[in-house]
Image 1 (cartoon, rainbow, N blue to C red):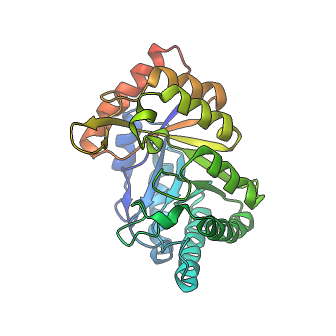
Image 2 (cartoon, rainbow, N blue to C red):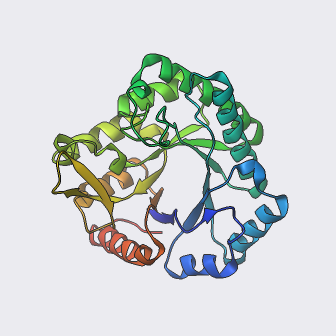
Length: 285
């Protein structure tokens, strides 16, 4: 396994510097991704080139590019089309910067945000709109030679391993891959306390489609009704002794990507993950 990082770059790329990339290299990361906080089409070519040069200056692989866009499952066709165009712009920027994978969030019908729940996220017609949008985004991926990598969550249309596999196969594209994020499937107590069963379903259904694995830990809060909160790797309830060997068995040598942490917590998460990988006798790097 190689260890990657998301969360160091969450900006318009103007703050990507040699020193920032050197920090990640010195911590022992094998690759870094970026998450834009502006629309991809607003990034100037000079800014993109400067950011790429910072990666190249320390020899750091640029793993994935993520960014915002309007809802791609909206029943409002104008909104859906705007979302597709935003995701396509992200693909084109990835190609311009030499990044092999462009991330796609399934978005949500909730007006509060892309990851918040909404009853209509799970309707068949919503899945149909998602598949249509993905096929259109994939056209641009094919044109530029960029893989499209899905992010998933129990709050979204892509809420179960079986649904995710069905959506991928409905597109018929070999360019559509998955960023497996086991933490995003911890939606209820039964799952939390039966993690090996979840891991078996995830890898059985989705193993061939996995491009990378996002690694996060989680805690249960003593609050009503159920509150499941992300935390630093190695300080929560994720059953790493089961998960990490499965990742290596199904996707040997892939990137396990640390994400969703404040900068000051990243070194501890990296250290804990490295120690667990080595303690299990798994290859690293």
